[in-house]
Amino acid sequence: MTLEKSVLFQEVQPQLKKYCMDTYGIEFQMIDVRWGVRDESTDDHSTTNIFLQEVKNCKINSLGPSFILLLGQKYGYRPLPSAIPVQLFNLILGSIESLNIISGGVLLQTWYRKDK
Image (tube, rainbow, N blue to C red):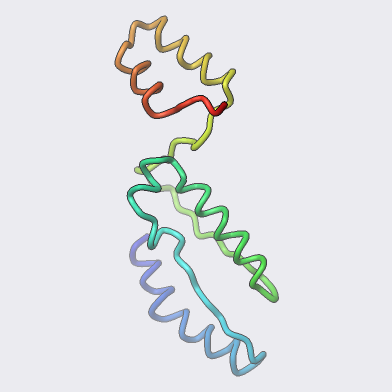
C-alpha cells in the first residue's frame, strides 16, 4: 500500500486541507499511526495500545469524522498481545510443554511476566 499512502499524503491531503479550511474554517490533519513507533514499543508488545490511544486522541480532538482506517491484506508483522490472561497463558504453556518444545516455553516465560 506504499503507492496508495503516497497518493493520499501528496495529492489528497492538500486538497482536503484546503477544502476544510476554505469551507468550514477548520484544520484537517492526517496521521499515519505507523510513523514514530519505536522499536522498543514493538519489543514490549505495546504497538497496538499506542495505535488505540491515537484513535482515542482523534475522537477527542475532532469535530466530525475522527478516524478512517485503510486496511489491506498484508502479510508480515503481526503484533503479539501486550497481556495474556493467566488462564490462557497456562494453557499455552502447557501445550508447548506437552509437545516437548522446551525453547518455546522458555521464550514465553521470558517475554511475559505475571503481573502481581
